[in-house]
Amino acid sequence: MSDISAEAAASPKAGASPEAGGIAAEAAAAFAEAYGGQPAGLWAAPGRVNLIGEHTDYNDGFVLPFALPQRTVAAAGPSPDGTFSICSTLAPEPVTFGLETAPGEVTGWGAYVAGVVWALRDAGFEPPAARLAIASDVPLGSGLSSSAALESAVLTALVELGGLDVPLERRPAIAQRAENLYVGAPTGILDQSASIRCEAGKALFLDCRSYAVEQIPFDLAAAGLAILVINSNAPHQHVDGEYGARRKSCEESAAILGVPALRDVGVPELPAALDRLGDEVLRKRTRHIVTENQRVLDTVELLRAGRVREIGPLLTASHASMRDDFEITVAQVDVGVESALAAGAHGARMTGGGFGGCVLALIDADRAEATAAAVAGAYAERGFAAPTSWVATAGPGAGRLR
Image 1 (tube, rainbow, N blue to C red):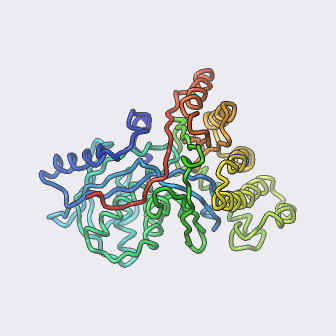
Image 2 (image 1 turned 90 degrees about the vertical axis):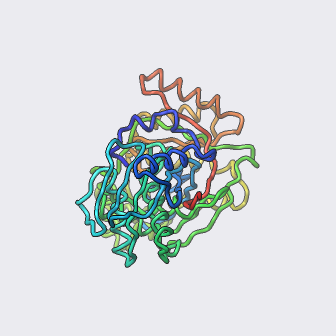
Image 3 (image 1 turned 180 degrees about the vertical axis):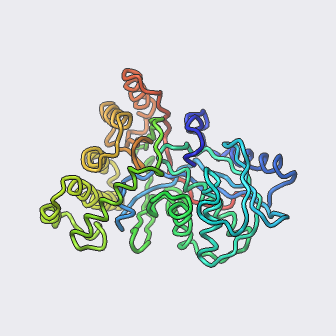
C-alpha cells in the first residue's frame, strides 16, 4: 500500500487496535455506502513485527515475527456482474478489474488486491468475483507490513467466499507471489507467513526454506516485560532499488560461494567465506545474513527456555548489523534505538525492510511511557517528525470476524 500517502500512517489510528470493532465497523460501513447492501462477511489480517531475522527470508533463512493487534479488514460480498470492485477508506478512488487480470494492468494500491486474484488463478484456484471494501489501522509505510495485511485479508476473504480448498500452509506463498510478480516488490515469505499463520501469544519461528513453522511462547507480561513499537514516521518503501540491490548482492555472494543460499553458510564457516568474497560490499552483506540467522536461532533457544530478558543483546546486535553491514537504517531509526537503550531498554532494533519504518524495544512493562517520552525528546532535539509509540502484544493471524 505504499502508494497511499504517508500521512495516514501518522494519524491517531496508527497505534489503535480494532478489537473493539472500530476498523471492522468502518469496513462494513464503507461496503454499505459503496454497494448499497451488507457484506457477506468481514475478514481481517494483521500487520506484523519481526522480532528478529531481517532480510534472512529470501536467503532461505530463519525469521521470528509476531502478529500485531492492528489489522486490515476486508468486507466482501459476491459481485453481480462478474468483475472485482474495491474501495478503501484510505484511498479516494475505487478500483475495478476483471477476473483475467495480468501483472501491469492494475497499479497503485489496487495492485495488491488484483495480484491476489491473479496469484490464486495462477496457483490453479478460481476466485469468486467479489466486491470489497477495505479499512485498516496498520500504519502505512512503516515496516509493519501493511501490504501483506491487505493481501492476506483479501486472500482469506476470497478463499472463504468462494469455498476454495487452499491449505493454510500454501496461502503465504500465494500472497507472496502477488507481491513479487504482480506488484513488483522482491520481498521474501516472512510478511505473508506472519499475517496468515501467527497465533495469539506466540512468535512464529519460520524456516523460510522448508516453510516449517513452530509457535514459540512469547508471554512478555509474565516476565514483567513489554515490546514498545516506535514508528519513526520516516516512511519506507520496498518497491525501489535499495531492497532489490540487497537481494541481488546476497544472491551474488551465494553464487560465488557455491551454495544454494546464504542460509547454507554457518558462523563457523564465515571467516573462510568472507575470504573468498573480494568485494567489500558483498562481504558486509554476507556477514549480516549469516550472523542474523544465528541470532534468530539463539533467540528461539532463549525463548524456549523462558529466558526472555536475555534476548535483549541479540536485538541490539541485530540493529548494529543492519546499520553497519547491511546499511539499511536511517538516522531516525538509529536515534530511536539509541535513545530507547539510553532510557533503559534491554535491547532495541529496527524492524522491517529498512530505509525508515519502526523500532522495537524490549522494556520493563512499567517503562513504556518513560521510554516513549525519551525517544520523542531525542527526535525533537534533532528536528525529526514526532514518532508514534505503542506497546505491542502478539495477536492472531488472518481469519473471519463475522
